[in-house]
Length: 129
Length: 89
Image (cartoon, rainbow over all chains, first blue to last red; front, side, top):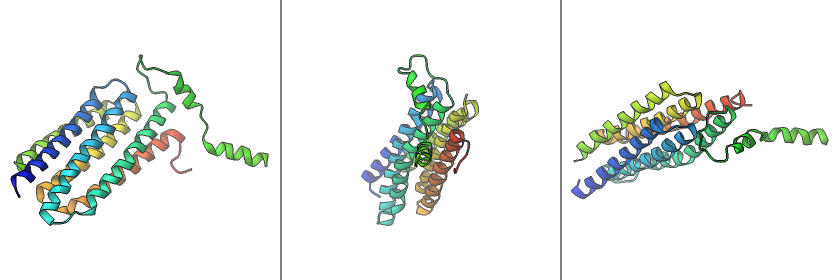
């Protein structure tokens, strides 16, 4: 393996490790759940993406072909991370998790809690019919 | 140089996992604990990929894919249970 390839792989690995570490430090240091959710879901996805790029380059140089597994892991993480974050925020709003004092538009949490699930509308329409 | 980088990144990931475990223990609400567990899943995927680079084998990618799927499904199941009181309605 040439020096340039090794340098590229090491740079991507260290960048990814730094992003993962920053995301976990943010999970500890930030004050509020809604702020705390921000750190790992972004930073960890980016850090894992960097580590996956390094892994793709390394496996291409070891095996001679690009395997599909890393691309599958990347696709799956990019799809599932926002879904998990969205569901966790809905849970936090529903359970009235404590909000930081200087959060703006705090009354919108109550508006979001009053939203009904779509099944009830369907049932109402069925009864009307 | 790659050996040093792999060891350095492994140390970073282990520190990140310990920080996540700390948040999992002290988390003031259940949602904080779910978030810490989800982050621990993602960090352990990174650690498994790093172990695959260290051993020069593509054998561990299936394990990483499996852990990614299980982490997503378990986080969504926890969230749905807390949100609706039931997982599958």
